[in-house]
Length: 174
Image (cartoon, rainbow, N blue to C red; front, side, top):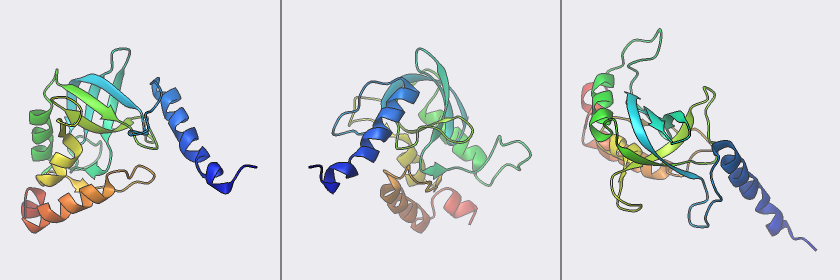
């Protein structure tokens, strides 16, 4: 007899398999349920988007859970503190930087960009979490877009602190 509890795992298992199939990655591990990719930064597009060489393909990568003011969106004005956010991202990830991308439940957005949590420098666990760093320093606001919410609580806490301390865009744009 199969219990309801066993059925509850099927959506998670299906999500993992879909992510692996779409991204061409190996199987997920129990401590990290979503796919991970390693690559090299080709260029920074703006404050929350980069282009990464994954070896077998080039991907435009949109950071999950954060949003920086616009600087390159067609038919949109440059947002307050947008150039500073783009510059900060370029400082963190100059061309040639090695990055580790961690995907969440939904691997792509409606524009076909790969959605990821981005880590740079060092080994797993000792890297800089780029998404979080941009929020912590006031270059980005949070953007909660279910089902990709693995770090939403962490980002919300960092946003509150940056806003309270009037860092970055919280000083100049609000």
